[in-house]
Image (tube, rainbow, N blue to C red):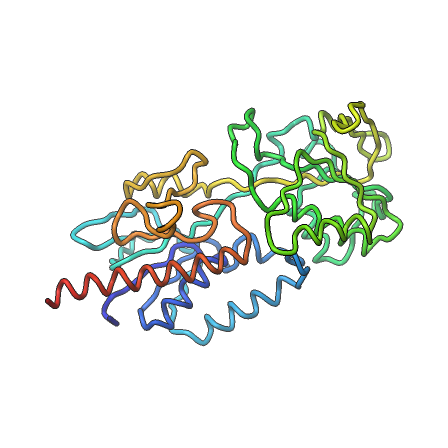
Amino acid sequence: MIHKKIAVIGGGVAGMETAIQLDRIGYPVDLIEKSESLGGHAKNWYRVFPDRRPAAEIFEILHSNLKNSRVEVKTSTTIKTFEKKDGKIFLSDQENETNSYDAIVLCSGFELFEASRKEEYGFGIYENVITSAGLEEMFNSGSILTKQGKAPKRVGFVHCVGSRDEQCGNHHCSKVCCVTAVKQAIEISEMLPETEVFCFYMDMRMFGPYYEELYRESQEKWGVQYIRGRVSEAAGNAGGSIQVKAEDTLTGRPLKMNVDLLVLMVGMLPSKDTKQIAGQLDLKTGVNGFFKAWDDHYQTNLTSQTGIFIAGSATAPMNITDTISHARAAATEVDKYLKEINNKITY
């Protein structure tokens, strides 16, 4: 099967793991990433949930496995055209170089919701309103400070920013925002023990193993306070603090408080490349805009086109653990497909 060549599009967690597994089976693999480095959004994380393991440890494993493989890694490479013809998939990059493959795996990942679209929260208007991704950068720097250079005494988290929001056209749940807020709330409490932390949520969706335990730990050990209700408005005060207006739907009372730092838990949207790729390869997308699997239960790596596979958060919001499992499943499906094709040719 060595003569069967595969392209993996996207160098995040899903793409890296898919390429590694296909290489172990014995296939020549090109791993194609449009940015300068591998890792996707997750490479910028400080720690991962639920055990708050350093994210760098996961990437050390992935990079080590790639280094010890025969995978050809192509970074800073943007695929401009996709074409399926005569059982092959032809990919042309920004340099107009065209290569053909027997199968491709789309691991194009996701985009973060642009928080400035929710003007009522003040992102891009007030300097102490940041996103969850921005907070991870602070964690990595080892310093949690307001723009005034002070440690915040009170921090607020706003859940479901750009998710489950009809006004934005996003009806889907981004799945990982709730537990990310719990993790980040604990990390702030750990780094700044005197800081009060509040989470404004719609519903706490603790779906994964040990997520509920982490949620309970955040309250019982770290004193994080959870307020059920949407934030209606955030406004800047003199001195840089943010006034938050919300309704506590459990008590039925309006609420107003000042926080020194407001963190917006931005949701996951389909990659901007998804629509283009789907159009060129005649692939289906779901109501949430992500690539649609051939079967949502039994064949989640298959698409409506033979030889074209999908993995990771190109298909739906997904955590790192599930992404790795989905990537390994994709490699198995590709191997099965190519062996079936080879048997048809042979016999």
